[in-house]
Structures are given as structure tokens and as C-alpha cells.
Image (tube, rainbow, N blue to C red):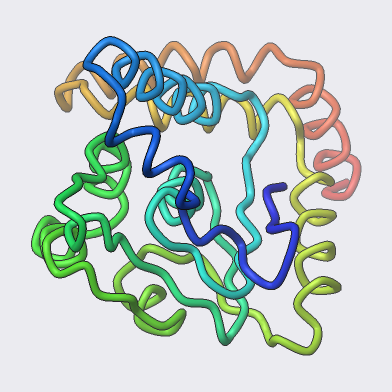
Length: 203
């Protein structure tokens, strides 16, 4: 679960970070960019679902961090945006994730307009999974996470792994990958226990 420490989820880099970026050389900037890339990759490879609980603003790198999560739960008053273009910057790494979350035209508009959008618009675009009431946000987020935690850990982990693995596969290769993952899932303890419970209810 990723949450903000204050009123906002994350409003992007602070002034000292921006100054450091603008004054750094290519190698230093590359190393800094690599660190963020590794965060995005670690989130994608993590065996459990990563949930971004967004209250307030999620802007620039903060919006990128939320977008990199597997699931975004937004409060009614949350705001999202990639304003990097306004200072001549490019949200380059998050494009790989944003492009998989929304349509190409929506992604392009978000990236080159730099505009901030409301939670409802983000939901309509497909960027956000659910909007939760501001007043009960924390309770609703905890409830959602608890329901997810109650699912088969192996099934959830294998599903996440396969879904993201399919990104670069052709249709036939994706079907083949699904065939092998199906076989693995059949052999897990969770699957065996689940089938046993189902059969007992059916008797």
C-alpha cells in the first residue's frame, strides 16, 4: 500500500531536487533516472498487488508512482497530472506504464497538455480503478486491501506475473504462456484446497 504522508499523495519533486537535476551532468542524471526506473520495475515484479491510495494531489513523479501501482484507489477530491511539459521535462519512464493503462490518445493528451484532471475524469480514462468517498477513504481503502489479502496468494501472484509478462508477446505466445501458467496453478496447494472446498459444497 502506497499512501501520502500528508494531505497529498505526492505532488512531485521539491525545488531542491529540481535544482539538483538541472545542475547535474549526464552521468549523474542517468544514475538518478535509473533509481526511479528500478522502483517502477520492482513494483511491477513484486509478487503481491501494489495499491496506491491517492488522497489529494498526485502530480508529476507522484502521478508516475501512482500509475506504476497495480491498482489506484482515489478519494473523490483527488487530482492527477503530469505537468512536466510545463518546465520542459518529459515523464519518460512512466510512459511505458501509462500507455498500458489508458488509450494512446488519452496518454498523449495527458503528457503534452500538462493539465491536472479530477478523480472522476481519471476513472473515465481508465487511469483509476475506483473512487472512494473522502469521508470514509481510509476505512474503505483498508477494507479493499483486506478483501484482496483474503484471496489465494499464489493465484494472485501468478496472475500478476502472467498479465505483465504478456505485454510483449504475440497472441500465440501469450496463449502458450497462459497454458504453462495454467499448469503451474493447477499444482499449487491453494488450488488443491480450493477445489476440495468447492467439491464439498457441491455434494
